[in-house]
Length: 175
Image (cartoon, rainbow, N blue to C red):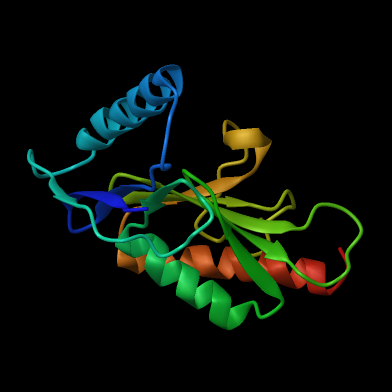
């Protein structure tokens, strides 16, 4: 099936992998949801017009893929390089890094959620005060009660990466 990609600007794209057939109700519901999401994403975009690309899909398993902003791409690559016992799992709105070795308890070390040109990095529920010298970790108000940091530029990626590595090392040490 063809893939439809809507490009808002250099940092934000929305991709749909439509099914071959729909019932009328499925069609209306599916595309109304997509239209709602595209309208929301338009508010994040610097450009008012989007470019639509209907190239062939790559066989990915998710039906809707929010392609990452540059901050997410950079930190994802760094996490993969520094935290070798992890695997990445994409969802419609974020990607997560899961610990792959046997471990008792929750296995996720970080969730990356792009929001416009910003990136929210949600972290494993542990105390980061030993390495959070800038007091940038926010412990209340995050999704699921997870601590998080908001990064807005390349200069903040290293700080966020150190927090993710700290979470990863805590799992490597069995904490």
